[in-house]
Length: 426
Image (cartoon, rainbow, N blue to C red):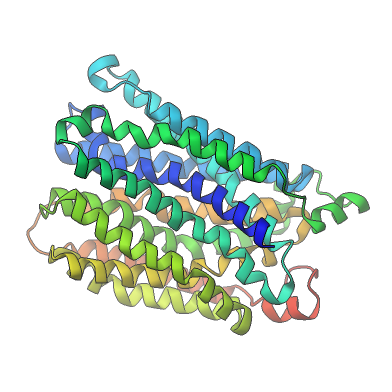
């Protein structure tokens, strides 16, 4: 289990490094380089628009790779998704700017971001099921939480590299070539991830399905026919997590540097410190889920998000590093109270024959609802005025309340799993 969990964590960290480095670049530099004819606000919105495309393609990736995972095994998904995301990320670092090739530059950026999202849409389902389906029932949430640490590690790697580059290079050097370095580094990281995953075994549950001839012939059709309500509920429930995370990690960077005049180094440091603590507490929250159940922690995380959004915006607007960090930290702790749990919770909600498709589609559809539009909506709501952007806080609170209602309609899975570890969904 340690070897499996480590391989899942490292691979997921690498894929999220690829995904997050684009978000940081979009907040700091892509607008002027690829949309120079736009105003500063419009350029930022356009850069966030290409950022959103990665979320729109993630459900398509979950359908594509979910079919592979349910028909041919969880293991092939881990290789194909990592390879696709790594190649697309390296290519982003090679795209000439608008000044060199004109309108083709943002169009290429859009295409590569789409491919990034396609690969990441398959990664989560494969990595989570690899650990969840190998894990003992009484520690499933703990072992399945390791891939959920991957996003924090990927974020810290991506932003650590960006922080070092912005601190060590002049602004002209960073805008000329420095921002490309993290994208090129993705190729080396992808090679390491593929090497680590080369010796992983297929999950026992999929081998049992194969031996008994019970694999789904058309997983998406089965999910749409028999689990559509569950997919919609899980997507709505998880939307707040995406909204909160990308408000802190993407929109807040742009708002702090452009509107508050805080240096990008200070903003990145505040966000990275909060994300590091979030990653560290993930397995401890998962242990609570193995003891007390999945649903109570998800409800608590939603409620905490709803209560914290106005204080978070107020603390951000002070532009004081310690207070901004506290605002970000509260948001990340509310976020991980839900997302440390869902890696075990979502697979348990779906029967094994359609689990890779159902869980991944619900998870990545939440990314569209909560992650794709949030930086754009938040940037629009915070435009104008000198006071705190209360509209952003109101928007996030509303999303949290909707997610709270969706979680309230989902069943608990822990009692059923304790009695019959491989039973059908609750």
